[in-house]
Image (cartoon, rainbow, N blue to C red; front, side):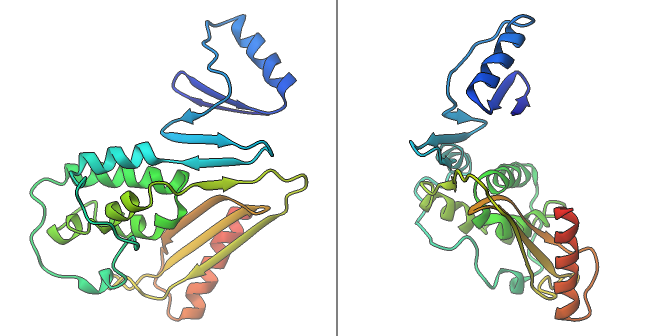
Length: 225
């Protein structure tokens, strides 16, 4: 049995008789509005197949971001970020007001952490500029154009009788040219379904690619434990 609470919204998952018991007990204390089987929660469309599998989609949230940044007419792209983005460091002007940049980055971070692991690396890189974003960072709009192009993508959560947990990790080496720090990538799966993922800059400066890989593996093992 799982109960997710956000402000005054509850999402309950479990066996039907347990769910009914919880709802009955809550109704004795509070006035509830039962919306039935979940189809939308916190910006996420939720579809359930006859086999019990779930498909998560954030098309509405993505369209909201596209509208806010005024990229409705933007050309499509199939990559979230220029692979040479970190190589293009320059001394261009700081943004006079970084509020909109931070708002956009916060919205992208939510999308990345809930149902779009494919943009985790790009969001991680752009979030490093929150303190002093430059014009080139704001103009790095390919991520939002990529989301607009792939808004229909769905994250599939399969129902399995005896799922086995697996974890995966990787690392680059000194790819951040500003401070020579490496970036770790982690993925945790339950059966065939991804349940948690992360792209994060390492705290230390690795002296070799082997050390960077070790740091990534050690941090992943800590998460597993």
